[in-house]
Length: 138
Image 1 (cartoon, rainbow, N blue to C red):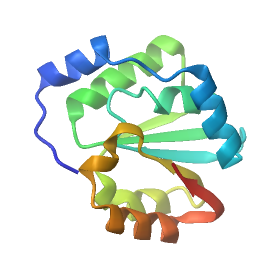
Image 2 (cartoon, rainbow, N blue to C red):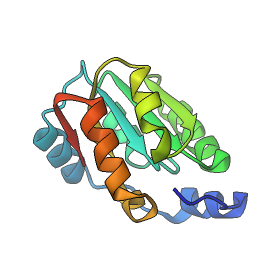
Image 3 (cartoon, rainbow, N blue to C red):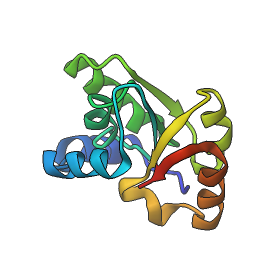
């Protein structure tokens, strides 16, 4: 995943980027068969716009982003919401296998607006080897 944003970009993302409608979150949760006992990993999570709504539907959410400033905003948003089941990790899609190995079972890997920033062949192979048998890549 490309890196190099500065703090201003993270500030703009946090201030101006819209989140996802509840209907989109509902559809993603339903299509992936997610439940409160599941773990999801959101690659390129940015300021947490997908990670945080998903966290309210699963047991654990992990947000991965190469930009510390993005994760700072995500962490602040989680604190403001009282969301305590999220872990924020500085990293990229290249780290997916190692990060997922920490949790034993991962039911979903999401990318939202970051798919164009990753090597998709590598990502799909990593997801195939890390997701549990009923897991999904969205």
